[in-house]
Image (tube, one colour):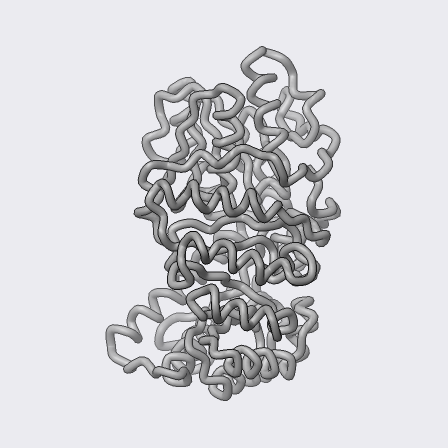
Length: 444
């Protein structure tokens, strides 16, 4: 049996692999969707619509070779999307899959129907069937993940593995899959089990580890997050431990001191916009002033600070964008991540985009300015390019604006634009305008 995830070894694929191994299955966890032929059972761990398109390209070939395919991962938040895009699959494990996946394989191997398995969707004579949701699983007492022998060769934003500490997020960001998939109630793993898992990855050659969940600082109760950092740092060393993706309104005092002492000393805040109007529209629950305060606190604690921004969000005006650029130039951060708004399946943003005509979506709207016309960019792409160029200059250590850097940034915004337009069209192709995602996160 193979459990495969595109691009990188996903934590979910390794976790399900470990659970199946514990149940007596011979399991291999692989990255990439090529070379899967010859296996009787294939599990695909898919995160995005781009992954869904990759799977659509290989499924017919796998089926011709006799493979039986089961799909899991965050894409299953909307199981009908998977069934319509990949009608060849045996089943979709809906939501959190560590309890459901083994039951699905047992049922299919035994020639039984899936009707009695909770948290699964499948096609029966062309009709979509979805069983009753499964309650969120316990996060304690589970076996170690199935760790691939070449895991140390992986590089995900500087780390070799992202290791799960908890699930859920109390935030309500409209573009984020975490509260939709795992729910807004935070469920934390036992500290000793996390440390044991860290040691298992280190034994396989991993040195650089990132901790993740929903928002990292929401792990456990008061004082638990600093203790978590201390204990993991004792195993890997602070120079090898990172904690990305923090909220500016949840990082202060003891938390910032722990990040300085026990990690690489670099944090990324999800800032998203310099416009209070757009922050409200995105459901961020913060203000521009909160962003300034969070950056100041982190710098006073001796941390380097990065910011993640989203450009081309539906409804963004030229004034909203201008305020974002002004904030980027004001803060002079150490690093920037600038992305176009991506309608991830199951999110409120995806609901909005499904009903939004292309002529009103900045990812499709042609830019009328000089740069946009010359390069053939859309409104969102042109804004992203301009913001990337501003961020290259307005940072603590400015980047030289060479022809090579300019070409790379143009290629990057074009790549993002093409992918998100394909994502949007796939959503509309398989779901149609007006679709509402009503399922509460953390079920299935």
